[in-house]
Length: 238
Image (cartoon, rainbow, N blue to C red; front, top):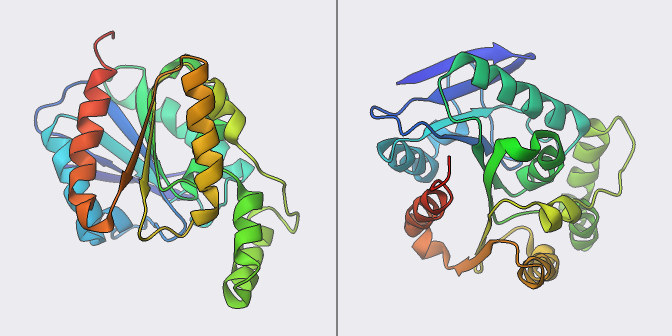
């Protein structure tokens, strides 16, 4: 079952499982992801639709928002995500600790959400993450068309102020399990690799739960299976 609603002037959707397991996953999308009154990227894209179908069959309630689309981790996206969590918790019968799945640009919002939700986060999965906006800007400088487009989007998102947005610290310090998944042969955030490797190493040294996977694009079908195994491993204590 699917429900759509307008919240904070942003279209949101909830995918309900037939046999709920009591856990929710908040999807935070990348720059090309969208949600409107009629459809969403997660419905239109065959790969993402299959992912949600697999998660639903595993019992998970999945919810997401349009989240101002190309938000690049701005304050609005973080505040909206925080408010949406509390709305979902009031509306549904769920375990208070949610899983977060963030893709690409969505990782900027997810990282800033961690200190706000604190103990209400069960785990975080980052798929081809962008966790340093500054590093991504530097990467795109060599591609004039994409750089111009990126800077226009950032200026709109941040009201003409270009932030130095590095969000690695909350990911380094959070106690909850973190899963990093990177596609090695098709990744628009290639400059993030060193930052992600450093993040992984810091968490390992501090004995904080972390998993790191590198996959080929052709093996993307197995991502959801890895995800479900990871999510279930964090659900032993309610």
